[in-house]
Length: 350
Ligand SMILES: NC(=O)c1ccc[n+]([C@@H]2O[C@H](COP(=O)([O-])OP(=O)(O)OC[C@H]3O[C@@H](n4cnc5c(N)ncnc54)[C@H](O)[C@@H]3O)[C@@H](O)[C@H]2O)c1
Image (spheres, rainbow, N blue to C red):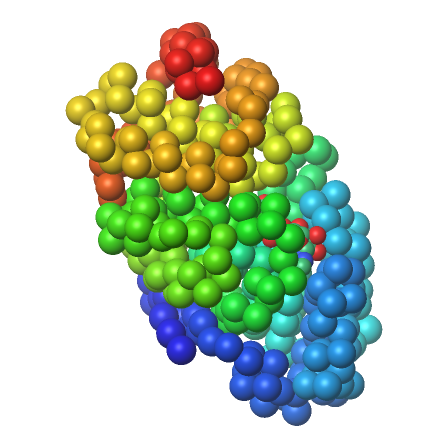
């Protein structure tokens, strides 16, 4: 079992626990406190269908609110329905919301918990690889609004994050790939993790993934601890995401695949502007292609990259780019130059 503590300045402490058998070991002991207005379980339709028997066995009687699965439902309608459900369950200021699901459930549940009575405690139980290594850690919560992703949200650290490898057993390969996109990104930013990843014979092996989830959480937690509100260092977590986001908006690739393509493009962009480590760039390229398992070069509409909220001045694109294992640089380019260079890289790459 691994355990970390994230403290946001002097305010809230967030405890992260990675262990097997969370239903019997972590959730069942909470049942008594959750009954009678003490809490609510929030999940999505897919997760509920898969884990209903376990939920009934260990958390029977606790009110459950189930949202329809998918990003399309990460909106204000779901948020307000959940808040209504929390009111109907008679939650109090000291009640708890348990968010059991992927990043969508975690983001909506975290935001609802931060709003209800100006903030009640939230326990994140991430069930996708992406949610375990990324979205459940760090306290970012949000819903999409007016067609803009994550427009309405808040920073609110969960009281507890409980990650169990059990959930990975029911995840489709495409969802594993999604989580691996963020894991490879973490690897580019952490030399020891990069070494573990490049040495792994099978990146999709569930035993291997279970072992590296705690290392990934520890890495993200260490960044968040130093920059909880994304004022500086935390933007390194945006590696691969500016170009990846632009690809995501004009293709049907998953978020993880887009991040991997983004890393491929941006590591080459880095080599044009900084003194980069060639052996590292080659190893990162091969790691990205191993997770992508082939796949054609995606369509690119880089104008969409300009919409990225991390860009500082209009007409310019600002990116965190990988330069060596565990090192990144911030690169700011006029849009026309960024577009031209990425276009050339695309010709070289594919
Ligand atoms: N808050 C953050 O810091 C942060 C960081 C990264 C991403 N995000 C957000 O996370 C979301 C993406 O998260 P995601 O990839 O987990 O998507 P998701 O929550 O939509 O889950 C993906 C799919 O897997 C299903 N699923 C979940 N757990 C399962 C399991 N154990 N077995 C089988 N199926 C399961 C879900 O029902 C869904 O269909 C996006 O909305 C993104 O904006 C947030």
